[in-house]
Image 1 (cartoon, helix red, strand yellow):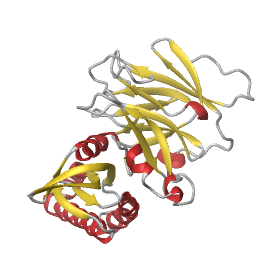
Image 2: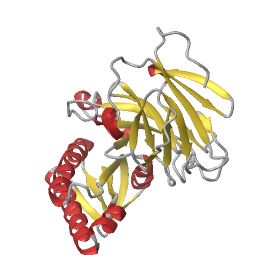
Image 3: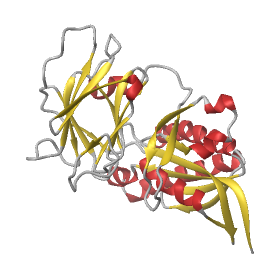
Image 4: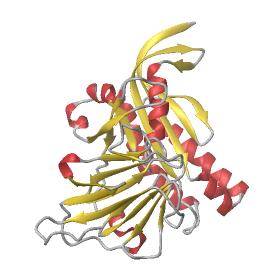
Length: 311
């Protein structure tokens, strides 16, 4: 027998398991992945959720209210870091978790769930970056005011199979301390706060401040910077203001590549993020070394300096 209920549907996905299998071997990697998924499931149930099904490296859970789902998401991010730190060698690849949730009516049939909230949550998961939790406006609306304050609006996304775009919000962790992105790849954090970022794409140059971020780069005509190239995903990457820096997050299938200044080294992002500093080149889908690669140039600015040099 089926019944209609109003609830929050949460999808969680562990990414990076492929590299883990290559590094640790099948037996050890399978143990780490299985243990990690089990930890996620226990957290969901501990916060009042019910695991509907496991999906390879992830799961689907159902909560009567989004407050429990938000608590579970935060605990998952913290717990997975501890699990990975104790279960893997220090130089092995790191798994990351992506979480998405949507609130609304669903139909329960034989222990499974169907409906718009299920579809939206599943497709929203594709847009989550490493260790991110994304929710819809409908989910945000039923949270307590103090919890809503911990979410930051991103943008309206076109999800596969839906005509109308969905407004998306990202959960901000309470964890304090320096932004790990500021020292990624051996870079030191800037001593002054950047005030703007210039982006140049296909001859069009714009300067963005904190107030008109985030911006989306991709193949979709809804993107702020649209590159009509088959190697570029519809929603390929996002640039936003995060922890006092301009942060680039890859949301694509083929990855995003960043070259800073005149350095020959290229930073590869696959559902990951890095802080943008100085000037450089963002390449979508392929390495900057490829001829005719789709690219966006960037320059981080301070407006009280002299006029920036042209890119």
